[in-house]
Image (tube, rainbow, N blue to C red; front, side, top):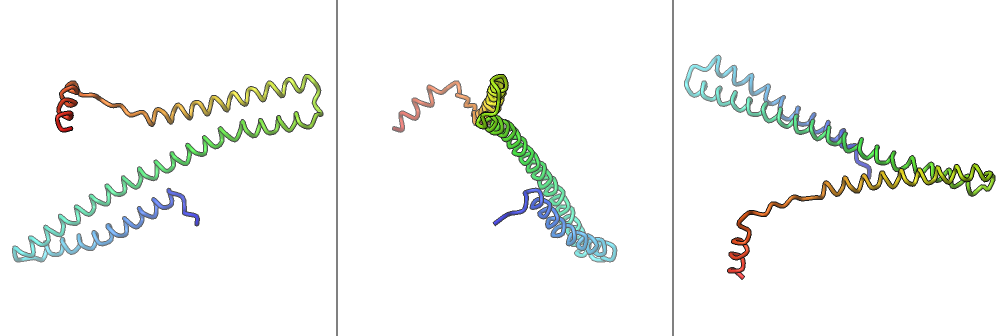
Amino acid sequence: MRFPPAIIQLRRAQLVLMLAVLVPTILLTALGVIMLATGSSTVSIAIGVLVLAFTTTAVTGYILGSIFVGKGASLARLQNDFFSSVSHELRTPLTSIRLLMESLADGRLGEEERRQVIALLSREVSRLEGFSDAVFAFALTLLVVSLEVPGNFADLVATMEGFL
């Protein structure tokens, strides 16, 4: 089963959020204004104020939700761009290597051309190794966790040993 891209799902969530929050909020705002304008008793004025306060909270929630959905969409876009770039950087040297190996396997190359193809193969393999090293180094930087040891670590160990 295929799922739509993350950006489409996030846009749908934004639309649902807008319809579920803004439409009732607009109706409640109109009701609150009507109650304030026509209300003669303290209770109807208080209810009008409460309705308007509720609608203000709903609009604030909608704005915050839209911001978070927008951030999620930009994160999904960045992820997609990253994977596209990595895929391209891996496929390009692999395609070159495959084509150069096919040229060598045909046996139609002269000695000088064979040397050039082997040199090109070496460069493409080096390029691929460099890229994979960079990806692994980047992955390691993401996995590194800094652990700060408090100055009174010996006291903590002594206390823990007391419980054992």
